[in-house]
Length: 74
Image (cartoon, rainbow, N blue to C red; front, side):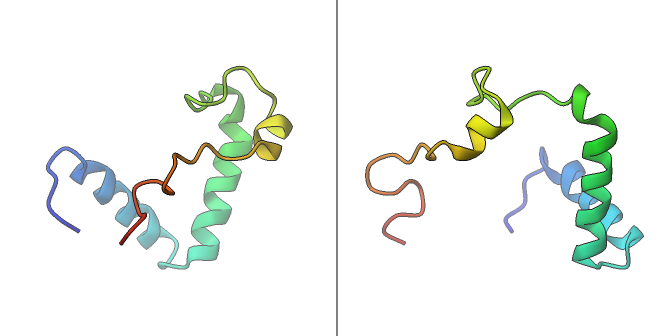
């Protein structure tokens, strides 16, 4: 990862949370799922949601620009 002072506090928080769960990815995911259940109504929808229900968002095809997006050609 290249250094980015603006994002470093986020990375530090993610490292701290991971360490709280012994760096076990399954436990970390379980923690985030519980937080989502607890605070879900307070979360903002993504910029692409445009008022669609979660079911409509999940069933919609992703917006992929011609050429496959940023990772195309790498």
